[in-house]
Amino acid sequence: MQINLSNLGKRYNYEWIFRNLTYTFESGTSYAILGHNGSGKSTLLTVISGHNLHSEGEINYKTGGKDIPVEKIYSSLSLTAPYLELVEEFSLLEMIGFHTRFKPLRQNLTALELIDRMGLQKSKHKFVKDFSSGMKQRLKLGLAIYSQSELLLLDEPTTNLDQEGVAWYQEHVAQNRSNRLIIVGSNILHEYSFCDQHLRISDYHVVPTAKRKL
Ligand SMILES: Nc1ncnc2c1ncn2[C@@H]1O[C@H](COP(=O)(O)OP(=O)(O)OP(=O)(O)O)[C@@H](O)[C@H]1O
Image (tube, rainbow, N blue to C red; front, side, top):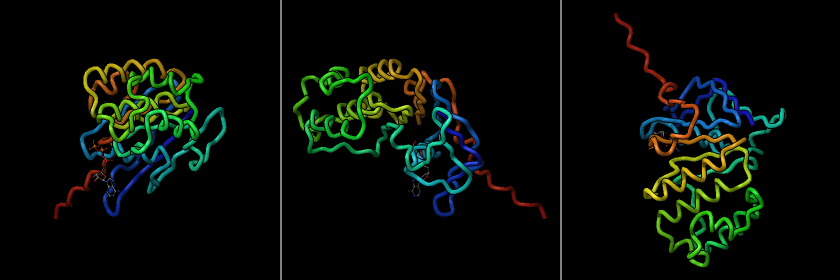
C-alpha cells in the first residue's frame, strides 16, 4: 500500500492545524507522527483514516498498483485511538465476535487464540464494562494489531498500559509489522521506537507572517 499526501492541509474553522504537507507512506515501513499535545497528530491520523475531511490538497491511496477511493479505505485499515469506544455491554468473547463480523483476524486466529495472545484468558466471559482501563487498552490494541489490515493506525497506543502492557505492545506490534504500513501518533519514545521514519507535524504548522515594518 502507498499513501500519498500532496500539499495536504486541515483547518478547523479559521485555525489551520497543518498545511503544505507532502509526504509518502509505504508498506513495509513504520512511521511515527510526532508532536506536542494539540499539535495535530490525531487530526492527521483521522484524515488518513478517512474519518475526517481535509481542507486542501490531496490524499491518494494505492494498493497493488490500483487506486483505492477514500470511502473504501476503511476496509484496508485497522486503528486504535483513545476516542474509540468498545461496546461495554458485551463480554470479551462477544466483543471479538462482533468485531470479526466486520474485520476478520490475521493468520485465521480464532477468538480464543486472540484472547490467549492478549493474555486475557481469565476474562473471556467478563463484560467489557468491568475491564480495567489497561485491559480495555490491551483489547483495543489486540483487535487492531490482529485484524486483517494492510494499514495499521495507532494513536497513543500505550495509554493506560503499565510496564508489562508496554512490553506486550512492543512484542506484538513487532511480530505483526512485516508487509504492513504502520503509522503511530505519539510523543512517547517507547510507543514509536520501532518506527523507521519520523514525521514532525510542527514542520507543517502555519507560521504567522511577520508584521511588515512601516
Ligand atoms: N473537532 C474539532 N473542532 C475544532 N478543533 C479541533 C477539533 N479536533 C481537534 N481540534 C483542535 O486541533 C488541534 C490539534 O488537535 P489534535 O487532537 O489533532 O492534537 P494531538 O497532537 O493529537 O494532541 P494530543 O497529543 O493532546 O492528543 C487542537 O488545537 C485541537 O483543539
